[in-house]
Amino acid sequence: MNNKKEIRRKRTDFGLAMTERRAFFSVKSLNGSKKIRALSVLIGVIAFVQILTWSPLFAQRSKMIQIKGSDTMVNLVQILAEEYMSRSPGAAIAVLGGGSGTGIAALINGTCDIASHSREWRQREIDQAWEKGVKPRFFVVAVDGLSIIINEKNPLEKLTMPQVGAIYRGEIKNWKEVGGPDMPIVLYGRQSNSGTYVFMQEHVLGNKNYSPDMREMNGNAQIVESILQDQAGIGYVGVGYVLEGGQVRKGLKVLNIAKDEKSAAFSPLNKAAVDSGDYPVARPLFLATNGKPNQAIAGFLSFITGPEGQKVVEREGFFTIGAKHKEQNEKNFK
Amino acid sequence: MSRPVKRKKRLSQIKEESIRLFFLAHGLLAVIVLGGIFVLILSNAVPAFKEISIKEFLMSHTWDPTSPEKAEYGILSMIASTMMVTVGALFIAIPVGVGVAAYLSDVASWRVREIVKPVVEILAGIPSVVVGFLGIVLFGPIIARIFNISSGLTALNGSILLAIMALPTIISISEDSLNAVPQSYSEASLALGASRWQTLIRVRLPAALSGIIASIMLGLGRAIGETMTVLMATGNARSFPHGFLDSIRTLTANIAIELGEVPYHTTHYYGLFAIGLTLFLITFGVNLIADIILNKYQQREQ
Image (cartoon, rainbow over all chains, first blue to last red; front, side):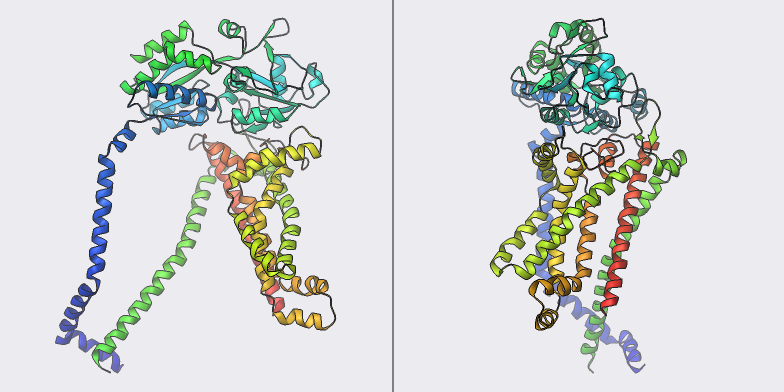
């Protein structure tokens, strides 16, 4: 009680002002060096940020073209980007995989400049894009002969489209049902964010469900690795992933595919068959931009669709684009 | 008392109080973050049950939201898969982990302990991607060869890898709790004529049991929540697992696979949050049970 009163009195009397002032001075004198240090750190940070934003490094980064999407296309686009960058200094291109669905979502959300995709856009995605003010334009950059692969030790040479569909739907469970050895079939496929997964489902499985026993891999390379180890396995990958130095990878076999029982079977490595449409699971590969491509992006795209880019496409195992696709690309540049 | 002294006392009281509040805020932060996460998951999970019945969600085997035929949202296979790899991992990790802990605390010489203990702790620092990679290139093919199956990407592979990841936790906490057993216990036991083995099994291990169980529960928590390793090493087939040599897909792997691509605010999107909620409830249950067990043992000891 007594104590409290004393404190209250102290607040009102002259002593307070004195102590207050003294305290003020003491804080200043004690923390003077600290304050200076804090101030200099602050100035340093501001200067650093300023330098960052003004530096050519940052300027270049803001001009960097971000490409995201298809895992099937990621190696091809990466090599195309490197070739292009070595020819036109100042161009900067970053390529990321993740799957066609991921790339399309990124273009819609504005987190990349170009989406690469191995399947066509779904109506829902196009609607979503227009809602957000993104007006996608599609450029066909290559043609892929989707390859059905098995282990080299499996003696099978060919399958028909209906057979492949039935195998992936889980209706055919043993290799002997399609003329192979007596072994249960082990299915390898991609995950649902993959364009290849969707393309297979739409064009080979007849829009039916995949077998729940299918092992879902992260990417083309992982499917190839699994098939190399698994004699009973079957997988589907972009044609660029089965080649190594122009040859089919050792331990791997690419099946010939026929449209149906009556037609002849063709290999996806046969350029004439893919061009003529005799190979039944060929598909275009796309790059999509938001609206009319700006100068930097148009430069890159016309390099790819031009003769030099197409030469790279061929070297990587994919196929060049036909006249119809070229015409469509020309329209999209304008 | 002179004024400056009193003033100093008051200042220090304020200082004490503010320090107390500062640390209270830190303590509360953990609670707030946990509450926030729970509310976020719950609010995103609830809309899923407008279109999926809880019965279908928990009892159906089939999860296929992108199906062109009929979207299905059943997570029973994934719950079974998660349970399977976790239980499998504990089957491997508990005997090995407790064994190593007992060796380190009771048998090993000082020099061996000084080498082995840091090595075990380094094991905890290996990124899960690297462990998953080991599963693909090393354990998978070995399993395939031993069991004469065509592919080693199975539940067993996941269990072995998760056991490796849970081991450091189990070893180091078990060893600490064995070391914390009072010296007088073993002295009494040895004085009564028990051998070192009998002392270890009948006296020291039971006395350290609460700590060992805590370490197992922490290991279990890690195994349930681990994503990358099982995603890489178990093949991710959606079907219901029939044994340890089947390919499986866990709850965590499913979220990781599908959340990147799912269109926002669809049933599929909310369904993934519902899976997250399920995981949250499972780990919450595990922690709760661990706490209850620990409390019981501690009471009995007293």
